[in-house]
Image (cartoon, rainbow, N blue to C red; front, side, top):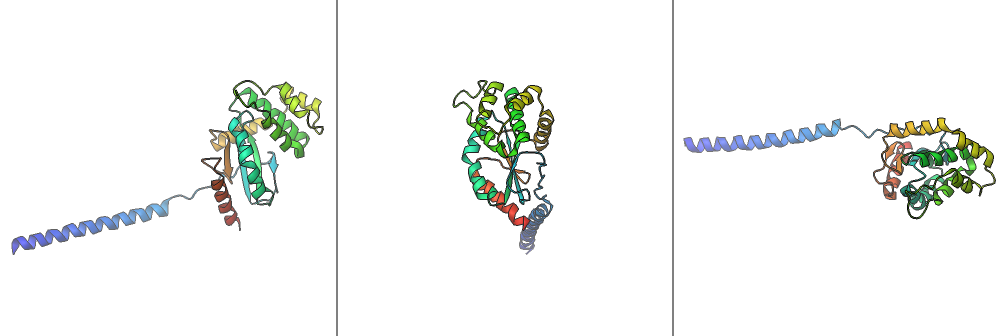
Length: 225
C-alpha cells in the first residue's frame, strides 16, 4: 500500500505541476498581449512639401525619393499611378514627396531644380517631377547625368517655368533651406533606402507591395471614420 500511495501521490504532483505550467504559460501570453504596445503613427510634417490631392484628406502617403534612384523611377511608373487613381483622385489620400540625397551632389541638384519649380508653379511641379525621372538613363545609372545643363533641358519643355530664375536658383542654391528641412525629415524618419513609403507615418517594408499599401490605407481610413 505504501508504494502505491507514493506512486499515486507522485502522479498527482506531476499532474499538478503540468497544469500549473500551462496556467503560468497562459497568464504570460495574456500579460504580453496586454502590455504589447500599439503601433504608433508618427505623422510626418508635410507643410511646405509638394503635395498632390485634397488638403483635408484623412490619410497622408509620403514618398521619400531621390531623383537619381532607379527604384524611385520604377515606383513612379508601377505603383504611383494606381495610388493616385484609387485614392488621391477620390479625395481619400494626399500624397507628398520628400527629397533624399543618398546619391550626393546629383541628388541635391535635382532637388534644387524641383524645389525651384515648385516655388514658381506648384501646379507644374508634378509634370517636371515626372520629366526629371523620365530623363534617367536606361543604363549606367551611376554615370553623372543630373547636371545644370540637363536640368535646364528638361525644364525647357515647360513654358510655365521661368528659365532664368531656375538657372539662378540652381547656381545660388536658393532652395537650401527647404533641402535642409527635407534632410531633417529623412533623418527623423530613419529612412535608409529609396523609395521609402509611409502611410500616416507608418513605413512599408516593401514599397512595391501595393496590396500592403492599400491594406494600410484602408485601415487608416476605417480609423478616421
